Structures are given as structure tokens and as C-alpha cells.
Length: 106
Image 1 (cartoon, one colour):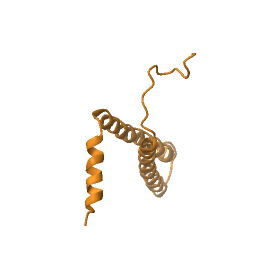
Image 2 (spheres, helix red, strand yellow; image 1 turned 90 degrees about the horizontal axis):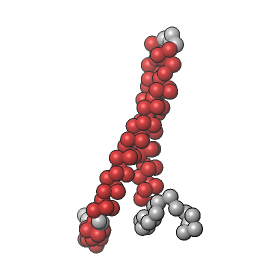
Image 3 (spheres, helix red, strand yellow; image 1 turned 90 degrees about the vertical axis):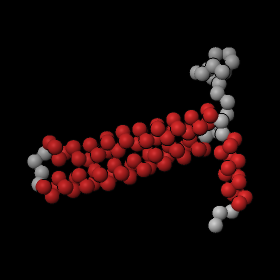
Image 4 (cartoon, helix red, strand yellow; image 1 turned 30 degrees about the horizontal axis):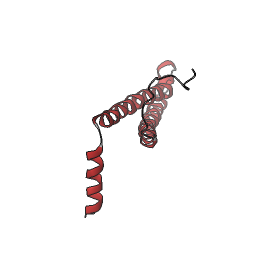
């Protein structure tokens, strides 16, 4: 059964989010998925690439494709998790008034 205090706290947390915060989460999810697809595709291509250029037995080709798919799946999940975890850990401080400036004297 759901704890009423926890459920109320979750509802209150959601109610306090601004539109900018919700937009930031949406953009971060999109970035996590897009970058994970890229990483997975590169990993799959690197592992299965030799099957395209070398004269390998059907068993070796199957092993490379299976290994590539397994690695790509694992890297996809890992990339999504790390991007979203890092986003969750970032402090929600104000944006700098002059992006790129590191000190008032620069």
C-alpha cells in the first residue's frame, strides 16, 4: 500500500516544478536517448564490422552479431542511466548572466 505522506510529498514536488525545469528534464531525456543510440550503433558497428570485410564462417558471423547486439544493448542502457543520473545530481543553480565568462574581470 502507498504511504500517504510519501504520495503527498511526491505530488508537492511535482507541483513545485516550473515549466523550465520540466523542459530541462525533457531535453535531458532526449539527449540521453540520442547519445545512447549513437554509442550503441558505434559499438555494434565496431564489433560486427569484421563480418562485412572478412571471409568468416556463418558461425563466426553469428557470434559477432550476437556479441555486438549484446554489447550495444548494455552500452545503451548504461549511457542512458549515467546521463540521467548526472543530470539528477547537478545542482539547480541560476544560469550565468554572461555565458562563457569565468570571472567579472574577463
